[in-house]
Length: 170
Length: 316
Image 1 (tube, rainbow over the protein chains, first blue to last red):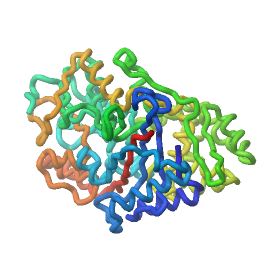
Image 2: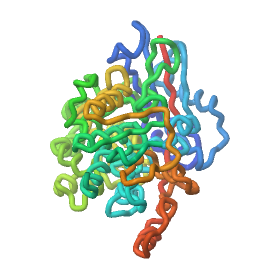
Image 3: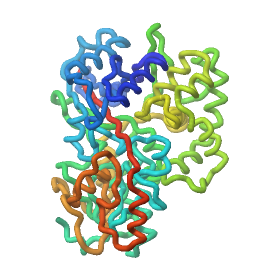
Image 4: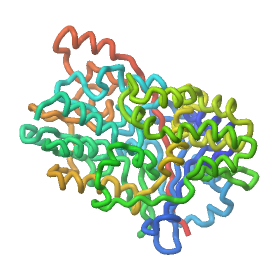
């Protein structure tokens, strides 16, 4: 589910995070997998997973505290699902610092290994004939910081391995 | 640290990309060892009991349209390794304040029918692109397509994709429902919607929803990593967990880092770049003037980073 309202509202939320501000009404992407997968929760209960975009830990912060952001977050869910807050049994939150601590690949909480803007389409991580090779002989990158970037598709690893197979004999 | 002379390749990181690299090499007959710092494989595809007993929560990723679109995943017998995709009948709902919701349905026609006066416009935009989904993903899910394998399909996609998402939405659609639907999908880019190229993500997610759906993995995203790991072991690959890597193993084998450029350079003891920029000089000493010139050219290309805050709840 996409909880963000109109184009204008969603654009405002996304611009805020990019500019180092926590959005007042965050655009939220929410999934309730227990509706389709009964293995996720005990019978009659549910899980919901949701996230929004906030400033990178290293870009700059506007002093908003985590609990204030959680309030804004849950208010946005409540806006489209009245009564949501009364049904919460427990909550687990990860802020950018928690993402970085959880996985060193998520620098500043960046889950996609670097912004995927237009220049990065051609130069990810740098402009190079082979984006998976490094100047260090025998060392290759296969992370989301290489093409095609973030997402669960395995293609960064696949193409990096193809590079190795092409350039190094067994 | 591994004895790198035993293996053809050592892969650092057992997330989907590290495991994909290992599986690809193992399928080609190479000996591989994957080293993971955490106690379990998974990376961005982990599921854990984060709240109460019996409640399984995805820690990072949750929905996987690109896995169904990926040439890598398509070729693998992961169903034999326990991976089951669950496909909701409706990929996406986008509620609005008037109490209704805009829906992305599996069919272009059904989605268009819910967009009122933008129905025809949605057909014109998405119909031709969905027909060319396989061709477009072949060019997009990899290194820059120069030259593209399917130039006409890529041009058709690119003309719209290069635009800012907000501009495409306002130019192409007249009503707020269609604009909101597109904006919500484009915002997966983690870019301002005014940035050129942000439209690409909206198009890709809509195309994926119509072409292959937006599935979840039964049991959680961890099932993806677990299936890849099981398949890798079937192929003879090794996985070691609970071992952070602080230096690249010496020797003749190649080490593929599934870590970001910043953490990779940190691993080999060079200073962390001050921004998320791959400083090639941090990775190796220049071996020749040619290498030195290459490194000088590749400096200073910044990657802005983008983040998220995630909540997951157990609910009644």
